[in-house]
Image (cartoon, rainbow, N blue to C red; front, side, top):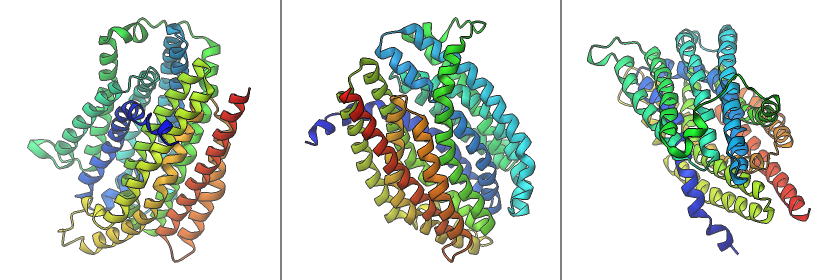
Length: 455
């Protein structure tokens, strides 16, 4: 019985691993920033966390919106229509550019909110200059996403990975030179980390376009755009898929961001511990995200072929593979929960020793909860990918809102601020929200695919 699913594992992983590495690349930018900034002190680490909390909300909207391009390109590819694939990319690029600029503007307008969020004052002062630069990096990042989603829609998942690896190398080099003032460069602290992020994201866009243009298969797709000819019908189609997808991602990222803000109310050490646990969890989440893209592409192809029995079998094989991998991550978090936080801090720093030890103890408790939500988080994101491949986005958006904001957040808020659980209580709310989302989304997928097979 299991063989009908396990025989797909090899192809699923082949499709997913470049996406996973590319997604890990985005997270690795934050990981590198956190480790390097963590050497400066817990206030600096908390400031990067606070600044990024705004950027991550905006980024979730941009990345979520851009996912609309993948199922349209995958369906066009399945149906053998190059013109439809190119049209999806062109209109996607226009919309992603406008969205990137809009999100940058919104973050600048929201900047004064930092002063009214009961965050430690020294953290806010450090966060503002960092936030301004990283917010602008959203423009190239979301344009990159349009190229990335297009490439993945054609089952070519390696090119975005190459661009992200290059961006990471550049980011780490600039960080090293500008955070610490190495080799005669100015010592800019966390502003240096922001400059590294901004520069690497501009290079990432240029490099993926260069890579795709050089390949004969893609040259016709990525050159000779007539931006004067914009079709309302295609714009409406992308928005009708992209807007709910953006909201789905926003609802999930926003609850994790709320966890950052709630942690800030508990103090800088709670916030630094939350940032460590969140950064580690987001790395394992990227494996689920990669498999989610594989689900979206393969389901989109089968939708183009109108083969719904095969669609259901392939999707289930990806769910099963995700479940097995997430069990491995849960075990790693359980075993390494006291050691993993030490990567982020200078444990030999005598001046900050008391703070650092407190951060490690809090982070270990959070990783214990995170070990359990690995499974829920992985399952909900791959089922969401399969539903996007079916171009079913409205009901899943409602499901994610209910799971995170009507179930998860009230628990996080109450247990975090009004019980002795504190930081752990915030993460218990996250666990409940993710589990509710996984269960409800699977029920939706099960219902829809059975209905399609019958009809």
